[in-house]
Image (cartoon, rainbow, N blue to C red; front, side, top):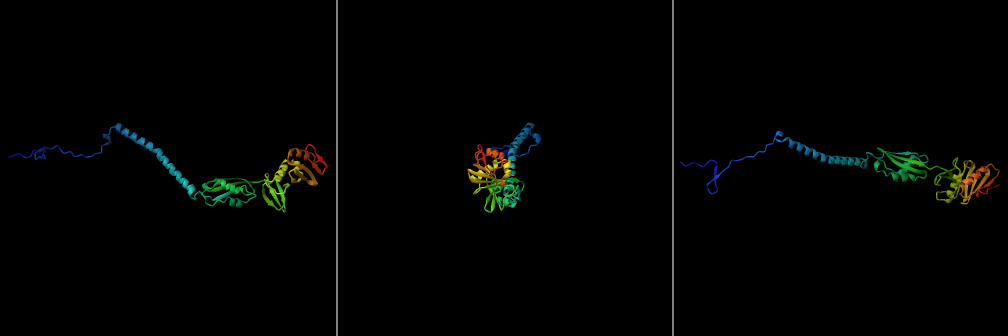
Length: 272
């Protein structure tokens, strides 16, 4: 009886018997934590911490940018912080309604988008306004603070009186001369008018005693300025130079019984 094929052998390509090894079957098995050395575990933990520390600034930056974008969109792109009120401070010669109309800020316009400088320029174009400032009062109020011009004289203009400030700016017209304001008589008042500037220069140089007696400053020409005082008295002033000297001399002579005092040359004074 012939023996069977040898165990563990397979026929070779030429029909002969070949060598056969043991069959291996591989299987992945998760190793338990006890199978990883402690040093390796510490190394891997430190590596994870380094990765987290490296990623943290980027995560924080991304969060900040996202929050900033949300805030910017809320403030600039929505009506949540829109203009709900325009508060006017310091307006007496002009009404708050006139100031708001001049400001021309639409309701519910995002407060952050209001051009403060342009708004101030529009309000400053009102004649009685000398200075103006505009600010934001969150969450929805625009504050307009107005400083109005101070009247220093009135200029007769036909049946009306033009009220001017110290710079000669006409900012009001009234039907009668305001109480307590001296008159300055010039042809056409204005800040660019030489006669207006000369008359106001003389007015500013007068002593309290002269102002108490003053009725008007008459500017017939730049070198022909006279003061009209009470009781039909006249002070010939000449031009607007040497105002302090002329005022001192004229004040000293107020007690003299003279209808006309000429201080146009304050070193050589005449009166009659």
